[in-house]
Length: 249
Length: 296
Image (cartoon, rainbow over all chains, first blue to last red; front, side, top):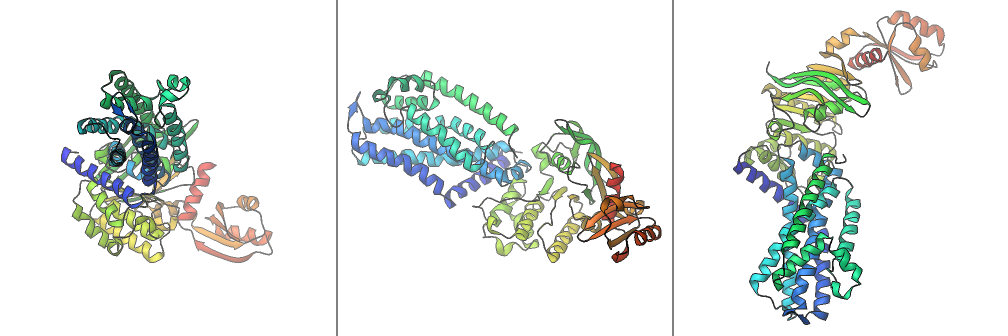
């Protein structure tokens, strides 16, 4: 397959995925509305407080933004692949001339515009409430970091989608997302939570992604967060590969 | 005849169960080969190897000389699955155009194939909302638009009415004339007898018999005695000359090469015998007989 034809095939796969999202947007509607709604509530209450020269409303774009991006990227590819597997569509793709990696990559990439949409909606909300204090380049860096940093979560999502049905996938992925978000301080700052939360958070990729995003606003250290996320990406890729090889038919 | 599908000594086991035990199979260009056998015979495992879903744990499977597990080889394959749920969000035309692009064919290839299969008017319809027969036609369109060298059809006419079936096989006959090979699995034995050049009977992972439908019928019972009887299946099986036995509603179908002797015993043992008739045996009886012999 040439680069040109690979591009055309990827385009078809991506178009199919985006059509799926546009024509049946209910799932994404909730995965966008919920985090943005939470964000709007908290930013209107606490957004104008300030710490280290950055308003709480701006910092919350990093923490709630991490939650929003992860929820889109964690939920959609896994539930999508589980549905495809249940209806036999994944099998049809597996025997087509398209390498399965292209199909799966399209599923992940299709979620990214929506993840970016969550961030844009949160930034707009912060601006409207008058609590946005970060310059545009910092906000753009934050967007890039969150979108790219969320990709390993998509691999974890696929690993689960290969093993359970669509309904169970939604439950399992929520069971991962919600506790990890709370423990990582994505909803409430770890500073106001029991110390136990901070001890656990250090081991969670959700925490390191939000801290890496926050560092784009505060100029904090990034190396440890990048290394943890790279390690998580490797583990998630391995899990996805093993899960695919042993996918339930 | 150019070999499109070549299977040599294919083996596959699931734990202690030997699903395929050294299967050889060739399908030439333009040829239609039907795979027959009871449930658990190994048909699905063999088909999964041919379409690249399973590796042959021993032996080899080649499609147009290539490994079907490689995407470039799968461009030569068209598959119609027994049941396939289409994504609820995609339309008929999007699926056929997508299948063309995925196979490296131009988008414009979709139009004629859709017309050939009467799908043009359904182009804007969501595929998931089609009837069973329309879905099968859509699957065939997605397979044919790739202009495959080998079509693998798994129970392809399930859910089709008789005119649709005839149309389906007519379209495939045209493709075969242009060189496409067909590997067919079906439970409709009489249908395979009508459309297949060759029949391969699998049982417990092995090729039990292979030949034209006429050759297989000639090997085994040439008559079928059909009757309604009070005799139990065990007793019927033990009657002289019975080669195959099958319950068919209230009737039994006994395959035999000695119908006169069998009739004498039947009439003697069952005074209430009714609905009696004798027919020339078909492929169904031949396959049943082969499998029973193989099991003996």
